[in-house]
Image (cartoon, rainbow, N blue to C red; front, side, top):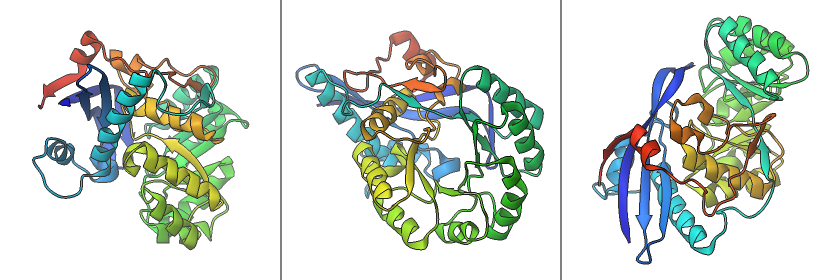
Length: 336
């Protein structure tokens, strides 16, 4: 089996701002494997240090066998994804089982000035989105959330995502101020499941877990603590397609509503997540409409959402064919 590892960098159309800071590009790794019969599969390793604490260099070290010990989940996801892509291409089928042809998705709004967030929200309404996720955790949250709710009107769902920015008491105070804007849920207001449980017991808005939940064990602990109403599962953070599937199913069994999202993944990660969402027939809008944030040809490998729906790549495999020009535009280096 031949393999190569590429370091890619996708520039943002505009700086991406959250409570954790501002980023202007998204670096990730592309693992390419080729079997003896010439079949090729692709897997994506997408650690995002501000979110998961995993440096890209750690994933590089484990994927090039320059490091011992357990691989981080993003590296495990890349290896599994490449194998699944290769096998499915050989069989002429998608990686995921047949399901929905398109997945409802939310539009993500960064934590910029209120007027800019509102303008982007209004554009989303015109584009047919029925669900919006707004980044919060900054001093002007109340003005930003109010401006977005006014821009989208009373019907579309509005989610808030603090990315663990608050301590428990801060979260309770902030959420109580923001609940009047009719929130679908507040995602990861604090860092730990214990804090989420404390917040959930003292606010009216539903609480979603994200960073604090990766796999099945975390889902079970969240249920035990009564920490959340909703869980946001990420394929890369979980460690791969099958691990994410197990987390989704266990959450449903425990009465926690699951959905899939990305940590600003590239097209291979988004394709895998879309196929998984289709196979599992998820009902909540998924956070997978993030490729439109990038300014690169490969970011258009999956057509943009139409009326708030993102088409599921039909395959074969993940259905993503990196062209020479598209790959060259974002290629930083070929590592091996």
